[in-house]
Image 1 (spheres, rainbow, N blue to C red):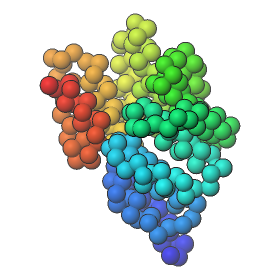
Image 2 (image 1 turned 45 degrees about the horizontal axis):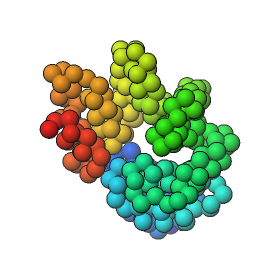
Image 3 (image 1 turned 180 degrees about the vertical axis):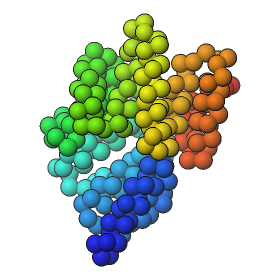
Image 4 (image 1 turned 135 degrees about the vertical axis):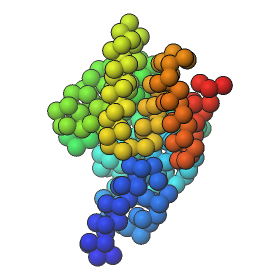
Length: 240
């Protein structure tokens, strides 16, 4: 392809990625071999696996095709290992070490520092169950998101910090964080992440709250359309 065609494919794939149309996004990049295209394709296929819990082989192959010593490759390898651990999808014996080492490596690079700190926090939080250590990484990631003007990173971090705030007794403060997280995702048009945020906010609202019913209805619609496995399961549990 000529350079302009490559740019067009990358741009279109990014837009489809945001919308959760992972299959078409990946197909647009099938013949692309630039480092940028390969990284984007790996991210797309990993995210499809994360939300659908299916297609791990395609995600692993795409990640393996990257330069293994780049921060992006190390972080995606770490995220793949983390996801196996989190959802108990036949994790490998060294998945925790792989994930932690990848996040440590990526956290040293200015381009991936904030995201690596967040993912490192999630690993400590959800796998090691070390909330104190996790909060320190979340706080660093939140600072980076605000310093660099990254609303998506801020949205992701707020969603995780909100539970700490709620557990600490400030329910209203935690709900404000969850709502801001949802609004930031909505502004960016990130449909899979919007559905996840709707589900998580609904979990914290009373059963008779009309907002809860609306959140679950719209989250279910997105989960069905995009085949978001764990979002659909979460909605079903709350509406059973």
